[in-house]
Length: 133
Image 1 (cartoon, rainbow, N blue to C red):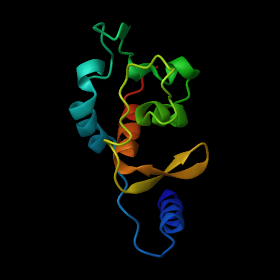
Image 2 (image 1 turned 135 degrees about the vertical axis):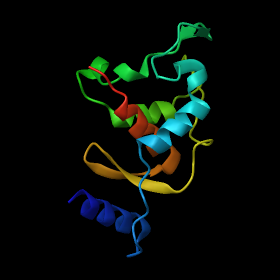
Image 3 (image 1 turned 90 degrees about the vertical axis):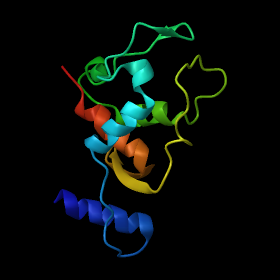
């Protein structure tokens, strides 16, 4: 059923009946995480006590636990992308939206398939996979 929903989502995004693209997975996201995130968040995603701009990098394995057990995809994508953060936000994390662009894939966010750059989707799936209670 999920592959059918995915195929329908891809067809809606592309406006054609081309075969669906292979979705990124957590393994692809792990490589991107190692290349872009480990300096601040450690290779396990558990954060760092080292201060960057006066702030410690948060533990990314507890995102769902800190949100009542729900992994909030829209918030996680927003933070990674950096879209709409504005100059007045005390934000240390760099905006990765432009760096991690690429062809969009349909990611289900709050019940709606949302075109998301492939790399950001892969990182999202990786972060979702490392959540602990």
